[in-house]
Amino acid sequence: ITLRLGLRVSALFGLGAGQGLIGWWMVKSGLEEPATEYSQPRVSPYRLAAHLTSAFAIYCGLFWTALSVVMPEPPAESLTWVRGAAKVKRFALPVSLLVGLTAVSGAFVAGNDAVC
Image (cartoon, rainbow, N blue to C red; front, side):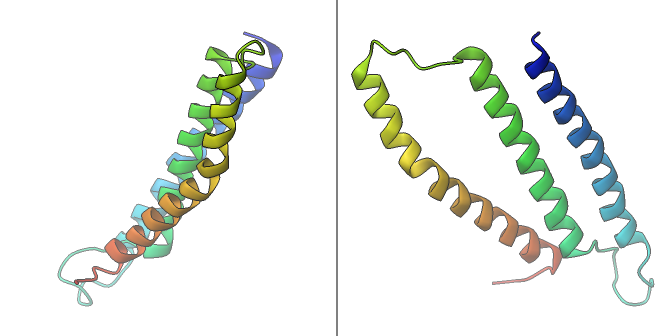
């Protein structure tokens, strides 16, 4: 394990610990509400969205780290591979942002118990 990889993995473990704290904070919000307001405990949709966003960030970090370990540099001799990777890279960020926004909005829908 190189120093750079060790620092990256340590940061991911730290994010995992933070995820646990955010989860505790989220669940605590459902236990603090008055019992007469709802028939069952509900967590804050903002805290639920924060927990989900943190989980996505950890997943992206793990995926990026795994890719950097498996293939640290693209093969320079394969021009078609580099062109294909450039096409994927162009669409990866917008699609990732759209998926993330959809998932986080789903957390707000679930947290507010919205019905279509």
